[in-house]
Image (cartoon, rainbow, N blue to C red):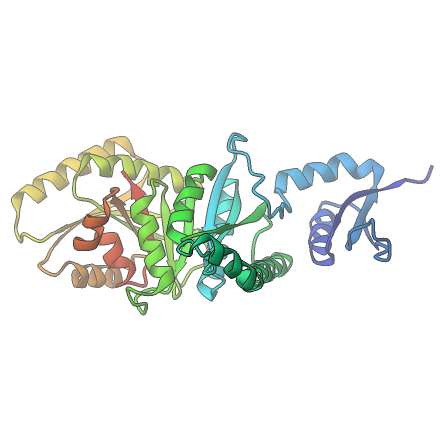
Length: 373
Protein backbone atom coordinates (compact mmCIF):
# COMPACT_ATOMS: atom_id res chain seq x y z
CA UNK A 1 0.00 0.00 0.00
CA UNK A 2 1.33 3.42 -0.98
CA UNK A 3 2.30 5.78 1.86
CA UNK A 4 -0.09 8.66 2.43
CA UNK A 5 1.44 12.15 2.62
CA UNK A 6 0.24 14.58 5.30
CA UNK A 7 0.91 18.26 6.00
CA UNK A 8 3.37 18.76 8.87
CA UNK A 9 3.40 22.58 8.83
CA UNK A 10 2.95 25.70 6.74
CA UNK A 11 5.82 28.19 6.72
CA UNK A 12 7.46 30.83 4.58
CA UNK A 13 9.69 29.41 1.87
CA UNK A 14 12.83 30.27 3.89
CA UNK A 15 11.66 28.51 7.06
CA UNK A 16 10.29 25.57 5.08
CA UNK A 17 13.67 24.92 3.49
CA UNK A 18 15.39 25.06 6.88
CA UNK A 19 12.93 22.51 8.24
CA UNK A 20 13.31 20.36 5.12
CA UNK A 21 17.10 20.22 5.61
CA UNK A 22 16.73 19.26 9.28
CA UNK A 23 14.18 16.52 8.58
CA UNK A 24 16.07 15.08 5.60
CA UNK A 25 19.15 14.83 7.82
CA UNK A 26 17.01 12.44 9.91
CA UNK A 27 16.13 10.38 6.77
CA UNK A 28 12.59 11.77 6.58
CA UNK A 29 11.30 12.34 3.05
CA UNK A 30 9.98 15.90 2.65
CA UNK A 31 7.99 17.59 -0.11
CA UNK A 32 7.37 21.35 -0.29
CA UNK A 33 4.23 22.46 -2.11
CA UNK A 34 3.07 25.98 -2.92
CA UNK A 35 -0.24 27.22 -1.54
CA UNK A 36 -2.83 28.93 -3.70
CA UNK A 37 -2.32 32.56 -2.67
CA UNK A 38 -5.38 33.63 -4.65
CA UNK A 39 -7.54 32.09 -1.94
CA UNK A 40 -8.13 34.94 0.57
CA UNK A 41 -8.86 32.43 3.35
CA UNK A 42 -5.39 30.91 3.12
CA UNK A 43 -2.24 32.64 4.39
CA UNK A 44 0.65 32.90 1.90
CA UNK A 45 3.36 30.31 2.39
CA UNK A 46 4.40 26.79 1.46
CA UNK A 47 3.21 23.45 2.76
CA UNK A 48 5.68 20.93 4.22
CA UNK A 49 4.42 17.40 3.54
CA UNK A 50 5.81 14.10 4.82
CA UNK A 51 4.78 10.46 4.87
CA UNK A 52 2.14 9.73 7.48
CA UNK A 53 4.31 6.93 8.85
CA UNK A 54 7.10 9.48 9.49
CA UNK A 55 4.83 11.86 11.40
CA UNK A 56 5.71 10.74 14.97
CA UNK A 57 9.43 10.89 14.21
CA UNK A 58 9.11 14.29 12.51
CA UNK A 59 7.14 15.78 15.38
CA UNK A 60 9.76 14.49 17.80
CA UNK A 61 12.53 16.12 15.74
CA UNK A 62 10.70 19.46 15.61
CA UNK A 63 10.00 19.39 19.35
CA UNK A 64 13.47 18.22 20.40
CA UNK A 65 15.18 20.85 18.22
CA UNK A 66 12.73 23.53 19.40
CA UNK A 67 12.31 24.76 15.84
CA UNK A 68 10.37 27.80 14.76
CA UNK A 69 8.35 29.81 17.19
CA UNK A 70 7.94 33.23 15.59
CA UNK A 71 5.06 34.67 17.58
CA UNK A 72 5.19 38.46 17.79
CA UNK A 73 2.57 38.50 20.51
CA UNK A 74 3.51 38.20 24.16
CA UNK A 75 2.31 34.60 24.38
CA UNK A 76 5.13 33.28 26.56
CA UNK A 77 4.66 31.12 29.62
CA UNK A 78 6.70 31.57 32.77
CA UNK A 79 6.16 28.06 34.13
CA UNK A 80 7.11 25.73 31.28
CA UNK A 81 10.43 24.79 32.88
CA UNK A 82 12.54 25.92 29.93
CA UNK A 83 15.44 28.31 30.35
CA UNK A 84 15.12 31.64 28.55
CA UNK A 85 17.65 34.00 27.00
CA UNK A 86 16.54 37.60 26.46
CA UNK A 87 18.18 39.71 23.73
CA UNK A 88 17.24 43.41 23.65
CA UNK A 89 18.08 44.81 20.20
CA UNK A 90 18.27 48.15 18.41
CA UNK A 91 18.77 46.67 14.90
CA UNK A 92 22.48 47.56 14.81
CA UNK A 93 25.27 45.26 13.63
CA UNK A 94 26.32 44.65 17.23
CA UNK A 95 22.75 43.63 18.06
CA UNK A 96 23.01 40.95 15.38
CA UNK A 97 26.31 39.81 16.87
CA UNK A 98 24.64 39.59 20.30
CA UNK A 99 21.86 37.50 18.71
CA UNK A 100 24.40 35.05 17.30
CA UNK A 101 26.11 34.57 20.66
CA UNK A 102 22.70 34.33 22.37
CA UNK A 103 21.53 31.63 19.94
CA UNK A 104 24.71 29.62 20.49
CA UNK A 105 24.31 29.96 24.25
CA UNK A 106 20.65 28.97 24.05
CA UNK A 107 21.56 25.81 22.15
CA UNK A 108 24.01 24.74 24.87
CA UNK A 109 21.67 25.72 27.71
CA UNK A 110 18.63 24.07 26.05
CA UNK A 111 16.92 27.47 26.21
CA UNK A 112 14.63 29.50 24.01
CA UNK A 113 15.38 33.04 22.87
CA UNK A 114 13.19 36.11 23.12
CA UNK A 115 14.23 39.14 21.06
CA UNK A 116 12.97 42.41 22.54
CA UNK A 117 12.85 45.81 20.87
CA UNK A 118 11.65 48.87 22.75
CA UNK A 119 10.55 51.88 20.70
CA UNK A 120 9.76 55.38 21.87
CA UNK A 121 6.56 57.25 20.95
CA UNK A 122 7.50 60.92 20.53
CA UNK A 123 3.93 61.90 19.62
CA UNK A 124 2.12 61.29 22.89
CA UNK A 125 0.77 64.75 23.93
CA UNK A 126 0.60 64.32 27.71
CA UNK A 127 1.35 67.96 28.46
CA UNK A 128 -1.39 69.49 26.26
CA UNK A 129 -4.90 70.54 27.33
CA UNK A 130 -7.60 68.03 26.38
CA UNK A 131 -9.03 69.98 23.43
CA UNK A 132 -5.60 70.62 21.94
CA UNK A 133 -4.57 67.03 22.64
CA UNK A 134 -7.42 65.68 20.51
CA UNK A 135 -6.43 67.94 17.62
CA UNK A 136 -2.77 67.02 18.10
CA UNK A 137 -3.55 63.33 18.18
CA UNK A 138 -5.42 63.57 14.91
CA UNK A 139 -2.52 65.38 13.29
CA UNK A 140 0.25 63.17 14.64
CA UNK A 141 -1.45 59.79 14.51
CA UNK A 142 -0.15 59.22 11.00
CA UNK A 143 3.40 60.01 12.12
CA UNK A 144 3.10 57.58 15.02
CA UNK A 145 1.75 54.88 12.71
CA UNK A 146 4.81 55.47 10.53
CA UNK A 147 7.01 54.82 13.57
CA UNK A 148 5.16 51.58 14.27
CA UNK A 149 5.38 50.41 10.67
CA UNK A 150 9.12 51.16 10.58
CA UNK A 151 9.65 49.18 13.79
CA UNK A 152 7.70 46.22 12.39
CA UNK A 153 9.66 46.42 9.17
CA UNK A 154 12.97 46.41 11.06
CA UNK A 155 12.07 43.47 13.31
CA UNK A 156 10.93 41.46 10.28
CA UNK A 157 14.21 42.23 8.50
CA UNK A 158 16.12 41.04 11.56
CA UNK A 159 14.10 37.82 11.71
CA UNK A 160 14.61 37.25 7.98
CA UNK A 161 18.36 37.73 8.45
CA UNK A 162 18.38 35.28 11.36
CA UNK A 163 16.36 32.74 9.35
CA UNK A 164 18.83 33.02 6.49
CA UNK A 165 21.79 32.52 8.83
CA UNK A 166 20.06 29.49 10.38
CA UNK A 167 19.55 27.99 6.93
CA UNK A 168 23.25 28.58 6.13
CA UNK A 169 24.34 27.02 9.43
CA UNK A 170 25.78 30.25 10.85
CA UNK A 171 23.14 30.33 13.61
CA UNK A 172 21.87 27.17 15.35
CA UNK A 173 18.19 26.30 14.93
CA UNK A 174 16.67 27.18 18.30
CA UNK A 175 13.19 28.26 19.32
CA UNK A 176 12.94 32.04 19.12
CA UNK A 177 10.29 34.72 19.03
CA UNK A 178 10.14 38.48 19.40
CA UNK A 179 8.18 41.10 21.27
CA UNK A 180 7.82 44.87 20.76
CA UNK A 181 7.33 47.28 23.64
CA UNK A 182 6.73 51.03 23.73
CA UNK A 183 8.52 53.18 26.29
CA UNK A 184 11.98 54.07 27.59
CA UNK A 185 14.34 51.23 26.65
CA UNK A 186 16.07 50.68 30.00
CA UNK A 187 12.80 50.79 31.94
CA UNK A 188 10.91 48.48 29.58
CA UNK A 189 13.77 45.99 29.39
CA UNK A 190 13.85 45.75 33.18
CA UNK A 191 10.03 45.53 33.40
CA UNK A 192 9.90 42.83 30.74
CA UNK A 193 12.68 40.93 32.50
CA UNK A 194 10.54 40.76 35.65
CA UNK A 195 7.66 39.29 33.63
CA UNK A 196 9.58 36.95 31.35
CA UNK A 197 12.09 35.71 33.97
CA UNK A 198 15.05 34.93 31.69
CA UNK A 199 18.07 32.97 32.86
CA UNK A 200 20.33 35.38 31.02
CA UNK A 201 20.26 38.72 29.18
CA UNK A 202 22.58 39.25 26.19
CA UNK A 203 23.09 42.80 24.90
CA UNK A 204 25.33 44.18 22.18
CA UNK A 205 27.39 47.33 22.76
CA UNK A 206 29.74 49.44 20.70
CA UNK A 207 32.62 48.86 23.14
CA UNK A 208 35.33 51.32 24.14
CA UNK A 209 34.76 53.51 21.04
CA UNK A 210 31.33 54.52 22.33
CA UNK A 211 30.71 57.71 24.28
CA UNK A 212 28.83 57.75 27.55
CA UNK A 213 25.93 59.44 25.75
CA UNK A 214 25.58 56.64 23.17
CA UNK A 215 22.12 55.17 23.53
CA UNK A 216 22.83 51.44 23.44
CA UNK A 217 25.79 51.72 25.80
CA UNK A 218 23.97 53.82 28.37
CA UNK A 219 20.87 51.58 28.13
CA UNK A 220 23.02 48.50 28.77
CA UNK A 221 24.72 50.25 31.69
CA UNK A 222 21.37 51.14 33.24
CA UNK A 223 19.98 47.63 32.77
CA UNK A 224 23.07 46.20 34.47
CA UNK A 225 22.44 48.46 37.47
CA UNK A 226 18.68 47.86 37.63
CA UNK A 227 18.16 44.15 37.03
CA UNK A 228 18.91 41.07 39.13
CA UNK A 229 19.41 38.84 36.07
CA UNK A 230 22.91 37.90 34.84
CA UNK A 231 23.81 39.97 31.79
CA UNK A 232 26.45 39.50 29.11
CA UNK A 233 27.50 42.71 27.33
CA UNK A 234 28.98 41.90 23.91
CA UNK A 235 31.14 44.69 22.40
CA UNK A 236 31.10 45.15 18.65
CA UNK A 237 34.70 43.95 18.30
CA UNK A 238 34.30 40.75 20.33
CA UNK A 239 36.47 38.20 18.46
CA UNK A 240 34.36 35.11 19.24
CA UNK A 241 30.78 34.20 18.32
CA UNK A 242 30.34 31.13 20.53
CA UNK A 243 31.24 30.52 24.19
CA UNK A 244 32.79 27.24 23.03
CA UNK A 245 35.66 29.43 21.82
CA UNK A 246 36.22 30.91 25.29
CA UNK A 247 39.17 29.47 27.18
CA UNK A 248 39.92 32.09 29.85
CA UNK A 249 37.54 34.04 32.10
CA UNK A 250 38.63 36.42 34.86
CA UNK A 251 36.29 36.65 37.84
CA UNK A 252 36.83 39.89 39.76
CA UNK A 253 36.40 39.61 43.52
CA UNK A 254 36.43 41.95 46.49
CA UNK A 255 36.27 38.94 48.84
CA UNK A 256 32.65 39.70 49.71
CA UNK A 257 29.91 37.19 50.52
CA UNK A 258 28.09 38.31 47.36
CA UNK A 259 31.02 37.12 45.27
CA UNK A 260 30.58 33.56 46.52
CA UNK A 261 26.93 33.58 45.43
CA UNK A 262 27.84 35.10 42.05
CA UNK A 263 30.64 32.63 41.44
CA UNK A 264 28.30 29.72 42.06
CA UNK A 265 25.88 31.20 39.50
CA UNK A 266 28.77 31.60 37.05
CA UNK A 267 29.71 27.94 37.46
CA UNK A 268 26.12 26.86 36.75
CA UNK A 269 25.99 28.99 33.58
CA UNK A 270 29.27 27.52 32.36
CA UNK A 271 28.30 23.88 32.99
CA UNK A 272 27.91 23.03 29.25
CA UNK A 273 31.37 24.43 28.45
CA UNK A 274 34.55 22.50 29.14
CA UNK A 275 38.20 23.49 29.46
CA UNK A 276 37.55 27.06 30.59
CA UNK A 277 40.17 28.47 32.94
CA UNK A 278 38.75 30.82 35.56
CA UNK A 279 41.13 33.29 37.19
CA UNK A 280 39.95 34.55 40.59
CA UNK A 281 41.24 38.10 40.40
CA UNK A 282 41.47 40.84 43.01
CA UNK A 283 42.60 44.38 42.27
CA UNK A 284 44.18 46.10 45.27
CA UNK A 285 44.66 49.84 45.20
CA UNK A 286 46.66 49.59 48.42
CA UNK A 287 50.04 48.24 47.37
CA UNK A 288 51.40 45.47 49.55
CA UNK A 289 48.22 45.11 51.62
CA UNK A 290 48.83 41.91 53.61
CA UNK A 291 45.13 41.52 54.34
CA UNK A 292 44.50 41.02 50.62
CA UNK A 293 47.07 38.20 50.57
CA UNK A 294 45.38 36.55 53.57
CA UNK A 295 41.89 36.93 52.08
CA UNK A 296 43.07 35.52 48.75
CA UNK A 297 44.50 32.45 50.49
CA UNK A 298 41.19 32.00 52.31
CA UNK A 299 39.09 32.24 49.16
CA UNK A 300 41.52 29.92 47.36
CA UNK A 301 41.01 27.25 50.03
CA UNK A 302 37.22 27.71 49.83
CA UNK A 303 37.05 27.38 46.04
CA UNK A 304 39.39 24.38 45.93
CA UNK A 305 37.11 22.59 48.40
CA UNK A 306 33.81 23.64 46.75
CA UNK A 307 34.88 23.21 43.12
CA UNK A 308 37.64 20.57 43.00
CA UNK A 309 37.08 19.84 39.30
CA UNK A 310 37.32 23.42 38.03
CA UNK A 311 40.41 24.81 36.34
CA UNK A 312 41.10 27.71 38.71
CA UNK A 313 44.00 30.04 39.29
CA UNK A 314 44.40 33.20 41.34
CA UNK A 315 45.68 36.67 40.61
CA UNK A 316 46.37 39.64 42.90
CA UNK A 317 46.99 42.96 41.13
CA UNK A 318 48.53 45.84 43.09
CA UNK A 319 47.83 49.13 41.35
CA UNK A 320 46.92 52.76 41.72
CA UNK A 321 45.27 52.83 38.27
CA UNK A 322 42.58 50.15 38.19
CA UNK A 323 41.44 50.49 34.57
CA UNK A 324 44.91 50.60 33.01
CA UNK A 325 46.11 47.67 35.12
CA UNK A 326 43.01 45.69 34.24
CA UNK A 327 43.57 46.42 30.54
CA UNK A 328 47.16 45.23 30.78
CA UNK A 329 46.15 42.07 32.65
CA UNK A 330 43.41 41.23 30.11
CA UNK A 331 45.83 41.68 27.22
CA UNK A 332 48.84 39.88 28.71
CA UNK A 333 46.90 36.92 30.15
CA UNK A 334 44.54 36.43 27.20
CA UNK A 335 41.36 37.06 29.20
CA UNK A 336 38.37 36.67 26.86
CA UNK A 337 35.51 37.44 29.28
CA UNK A 338 35.50 39.54 32.43
CA UNK A 339 33.00 38.36 35.07
CA UNK A 340 32.11 40.51 38.04
CA UNK A 341 29.50 41.08 40.71
CA UNK A 342 27.39 44.19 40.98
CA UNK A 343 24.71 45.27 43.41
CA UNK A 344 21.55 47.22 42.80
CA UNK A 345 22.14 50.91 43.51
CA UNK A 346 19.96 53.99 43.54
CA UNK A 347 20.12 56.69 40.88
CA UNK A 348 22.32 59.02 42.96
CA UNK A 349 24.94 56.32 43.49
CA UNK A 350 24.89 55.53 39.77
CA UNK A 351 25.34 59.21 38.87
CA UNK A 352 28.08 60.18 41.31
CA UNK A 353 29.94 56.89 41.84
CA UNK A 354 30.03 54.82 38.64
CA UNK A 355 30.40 51.09 39.22
CA UNK A 356 33.30 49.11 37.79
CA UNK A 357 30.87 47.43 35.37
CA UNK A 358 29.84 50.83 33.95
CA UNK A 359 33.47 51.95 33.72
CA UNK A 360 34.51 48.79 31.90
CA UNK A 361 31.50 48.94 29.59
CA UNK A 362 32.71 52.25 28.14
CA UNK A 363 36.41 51.48 28.45
CA UNK A 364 36.98 47.98 27.13
CA UNK A 365 36.32 45.73 24.16
CA UNK A 366 36.25 42.67 26.43
CA UNK A 367 32.81 41.09 26.96
CA UNK A 368 31.41 41.56 30.47
CA UNK A 369 29.45 38.92 32.33
CA UNK A 370 27.74 40.82 35.13
CA UNK A 371 26.27 38.81 37.99
CA UNK A 372 24.04 39.93 40.82
CA UNK A 373 25.24 38.76 44.21
